[in-house]
Image (cartoon, rainbow, N blue to C red):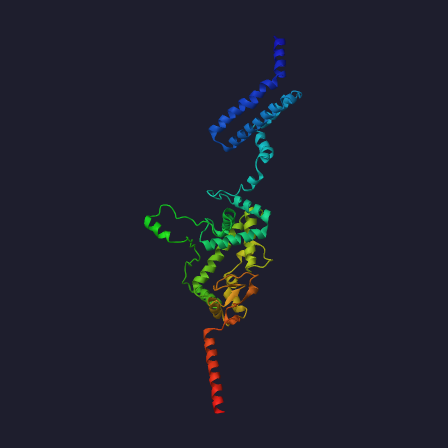
Length: 399
């Protein structure tokens, strides 16, 4: 009896790979796959889907090199050990092998590059997708090309009247650029569904639909004495038309400070803080609101309304000596006497960049810039010429 049991154990050990192989490679994975289907766990689904992919590859390898593997006696034992490593949940070898060795070979690298850019029916659900797409574009084309792309997209968006579902301060322009490009002739958004027939007929005559967003915020207590005195002082000092222009600047400043405050709550190595923080600081440097040495978000919180009002075109025209007063500067701008570079600007609240400040000058068509004289001056010159001609004729008659 003892010898029979010993012989049975010897046979079992000699054929252990034959008996344990199907159990480890087929029976248990089938049972675990059925459980994964019933539990609806995405982690289990990924584990066993990747295992069956690897099992198919191993089977294909065995069928291809069957004659060669017959000369390797340790192949069945090596296969059993490898299968245990792939199957056992403690190791999760199937997911590791697929992620590091199989997927890079079978997935097109170009498909991986556009993985983070959704289709036209999709939207960005996570900021990490936006950041990754933007970082990939910057690595391939550079920072200057990325900024030019955003500027072109901003111009075409404003000219076309279409808009995105995200705000500019929350990388809305990045989404727009990476999703739609900078085509100025992009399709306009269609009319919303469910409109009444009368409203639909009225919208047929509209060429495009503009999103009139909020541009200013009225104070909660606009008639406080201290607030009135401070607002009237700024309105008179900077030549504003009304307090609404001041509220518009205050609203823009509050949005910028809120974004900076939210970024400061994140970790310093957070990719969102790095990307959006650097973009915000570059914008502040570009418009002269901060110096190059003030390269921290804490300085953004210290900005005041006066910093923004100092960068208005009306203020810079007056301080450059082109106008006699701050109100005279507003009149010159509104009457199209001022240009920034080659572009005539008639908006007193135009924010001037640092590199464009030295190009502020009188318009070439303006009388103040060497152009055609004004109507009153031409009339006076004509009257003076007639008077001079009449005086010369009288002198000849007297002679």
